[in-house]
Length: 146
Image 1: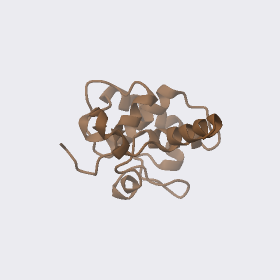
Image 2: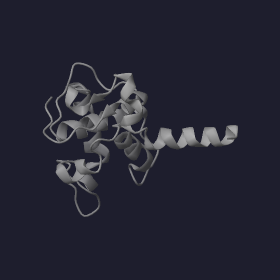
Image 3: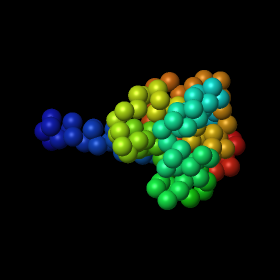
Image 4: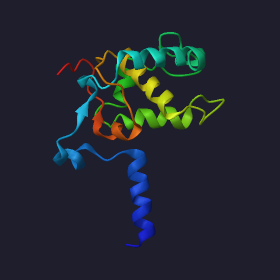
């Protein structure tokens, strides 16, 4: 295998996430049920959502004619069992549709925290600090309180 192919495969895995079965040996995997964001961070996400997202996704993230809901079992079924990084990447690479790429890492993390809170996941003491840490956090099934 050439170095170029190895780099290409690594890039694809970084974007889509490494299956949790590949990471099991690390023992460091957490879940969204573990309180992985802070309440303050979700509050910042709420303020940002009010400025940039609510027109399409609705005041309470219920969705609308322009965009899907960001809460509930229908939304979570797409992400359950997958790394939280996928939600982050979707927001970062597609939102807002009229200014894609305008969100900074910390703003996107704040929005991820808001989405977690809206879906009933508990807040913890520490905020989500870096996008890279989201690869080791799996989206838990709804109602998983551990």
